[in-house]
Length: 223
Image 1 (spheres, helix red, strand yellow):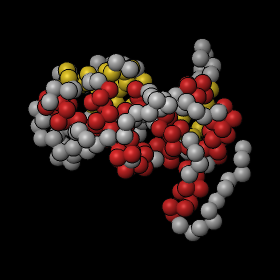
Image 2: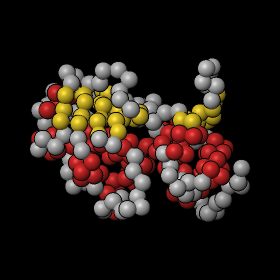
Image 3: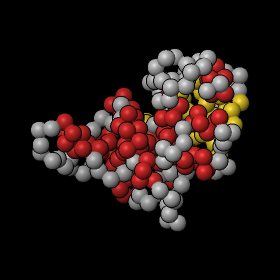
């Protein structure tokens, strides 16, 4: 475990960066917002990180109270890493950072890696932050609570909209029948992530197909 480095400044921003300012730390948080992950899964979804650096960051994050490590019961018997409550409180930090960085995304470079679930946070931002009116709208910028399955050619993932205290998204299809199912292409995902298109404008334009019988699906269709 590496010694903690500090800016040695009596400032809350500096103190926060003492903990999460190292390269890869916030991206590890992004991955763990999906729930418990094995080391091998984290390494696979963080292309470019070395095994030594990943192991070091995970140890530092455990020391700083952002993550815990536990062993799965048989037959799994593997160790998984997961966020603590303190770690999950970084979600709005990542969302604000993602919002700020929309203009930096630009066109995908030939060297850029891509995972479908990296669009989970931008889509969640779009669903939770828009003022759509319709059944299921709660008056505070949410289309309601529910499970949303997202289908892309590059892969499927699911979102927990308006739900606190657990995973923010998950890999693969929804584990149960979702409240809404969205089908879209990567160009539409990219436009949403860049802030050029809202989720609801994309639904209206037919660029996002919506199915499902839940109030959330109905609110999206009636946006």
